Image (tube, rainbow, N blue to C red; front, side, top):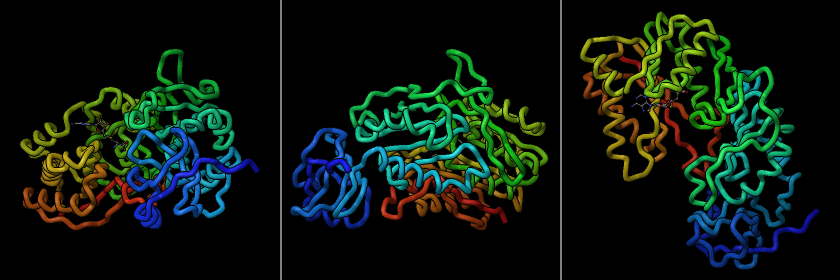
Length: 406
Ligand code: SAH
């Protein structure tokens, strides 16, 4: 075994108390002393007692991210990381029977802080958000494909948060060739891959572009919510903020008609291609601003039996919460108005800064505005491959509330 890291970071007593909560981060103010360079693996200690290992950042307010908590931690060598990735992948085995598009590693909840790995069939996409995991890129380029069964590995490192760690934003192929016949790609063209999800209405194929699509190519975090929405769907179905229309694609077969609305032309192109590929003839895509389109629907007296609202995060910071709440209120009020009696509203918020109790408050106000009464059928969260650490409440960001109009 290789020697353990030589550099030691000492926690203050307050830092020790915080560490005992199990939170995966240690803030700068909670360090009594720090040795080591940006991105190093360091030993964490308090008053000379070893507590474990962590990645060190000298740039961010989050100085340490725990790798292992133990008085005798292991050296985080390639075998160590391989084991963590294998464990995370094994946890997705049941899910992998229903889809080949899933998150393999979800940051600290899978024991690898600062790393996300998404798999889209033959392509694995990695995002490293801290200097510590940035150093794992050569290892990931060499081994990740073999570990998760993908032929190519792409680093989708164009995230803004990387700047907090002083990391460049870039997208590059770490290993492998353009995926074979499963992909329809050409030089300079998007690297598109067909993947599938087996929902309650059967298999849905959809196109992802891991190099330049939204997120790493798809909104994997909504998968089980899409499946649930499809189970509840009937009549006229509205997929508002549809992106590639995955809610609608899963629900369409159970509905008389499905309408997908998004402001992005590229997203609607994906939706139209997928509708054709899946032989779905009752799905219509509309390019519009959802706020305007819902207002118009209300004015015209248009009715839907199932409505999905899946807007982007309106509150990216705490300061934005009041304005965001107004946006959610307006949207939900309109959606509630156009819903026919007995209809189902699946309404989501991915703003971490707006917690579930606040979101429910917004929905109550919206229902009062719409002069309607609703039953809460379900309160849901993010997909099972985006696990939440109990001790890391910040990692529970997605709310999905299912309401029935009385
Ligand atoms: N429901 C999707 C994910 C939606 S992400 C899925 O399950 O895959 C949010 C989408 O909202 C993005 O595709 C974005 O292009 C779109 N969007 C953002 N603001 C919008 C607006 N005002 N009107 C319409 N679409 C909008």
